[in-house]
Length: 458
Ligand SMILES: *[C@@H]1O[C@H](CO)[C@@H](O)[C@H](O)[C@H]1NC(C)=O
Ligand SMILES: *[C@@H]1O[C@H](CO)[C@@H](O)[C@H](O)[C@H]1NC(C)=O
Ligand SMILES: *[C@@H]1O[C@H](CO)[C@@H](O)[C@H](O)[C@H]1NC(C)=O
Ligand SMILES: *[C@@H]1O[C@H](CO)[C@@H](O)[C@H](O)[C@H]1NC(C)=O
Image (cartoon, rainbow, N blue to C red):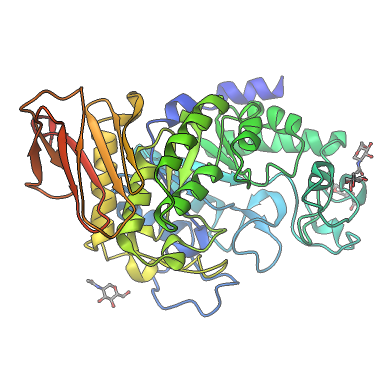
């Protein structure tokens, strides 16, 4: 009953279907902008660097001017000391004072909503912050302050799903969701969080580490779009979780993108990938597609070629699903393993003329003004180093070689004589002939085409 009451009170809750039109910017609350505007470097990336809600609120233009209309914020509740990233809960019911006050958080959300931007909260229900292998400091955790609420310590055996669910991720105490108090409180908590702060959607941490039936209850109780972290490259394993939540962070595609655009694997792999994805995922359109995130070395760290990153970003922004761009991609960040991939953004907040910032802006404008999510994805051409797909009258061409390429792409939705243009360069237009659309990609370029007559300047 309580759950129903909460649901009816929430004015902002948004469903998976509604989220399909959104483009998400992922950021770490501690790393985007300092509350006092200080732009000096951060001395220690493994501790708090000073970012917070006021800094973020003062710099929403930087995000919105690229076209993003949703933000995924790293967890905001009180954490154990030094846990700047937020994945070590201490008090589930209070806002982390390092980021600002609760009023600051509420002001930020109101500012987002007044811009028609949505907030995706990042939540953890698997574990709490480190309090000793024998839970010596369990009394500091609110509200899970008794040892009976946790699984006893054991290291995870990744080949044994029971162990993945019952053992501990490193030194993070593992909550036992079969204990009625724990389960009930977590369900209550997610309803409280979503309704109290008008949260529009949820990114759920460590989904593999908790039994699926718990997530089914948790996700349904939240009343909003839920996207689960299933840290696994297997499509079928991800798909199993899409049955209990709305979508997963598309790790299988994260690996595909790196295979194609860093390792130059044959683009035919994309064909296989799509045929598997579309038959195995319950709904491909609810997956969260990303190139980079806070848990992996950035794309440019592994492969420092901007053209390849551009292909990867456009891929994630145009493939079926909900795109998520990790902050700093628009500035060419190239940080290595965590915490190097969690750079402060503040030195770049005024750098909105950079090539990548403008590139991302153009790609998002193409996605949104044409509402490409409304059109079926259709492969148009595959070769080892070239791939082309369409969505309605919109054609996307990718390359994973440094050589210049030329292909005639047969494309029925256009008529002979139509003029189509690449939105990244004014004047890069070609005329469709009986042989198709003549596509030139120079030195690893990516192009987004649309009918010249349909280009609207917004
Ligand atoms: C746990 O927290 C509850 C609620 O604050 C409190 O009533 C209880 O005494 C605490 N238990 C322990 C063992 O500290
Ligand atoms: C799997 O892990 C569980 C929990 O640690 C353990 O009880 C069980 O014996 C393990 N099964 C196998 C086959 O190792
Ligand atoms: C989890 O809690 C349930 C319910 O109290 C209990 O039956 C079960 O043994 C616990 N699991 C572990 C691995 O401690
Ligand atoms: C951007 O801000 C930095 C200080 O963070 C300053 O050094 C730099 O000159 C500014 N650049 C521009 C183009 O305003």
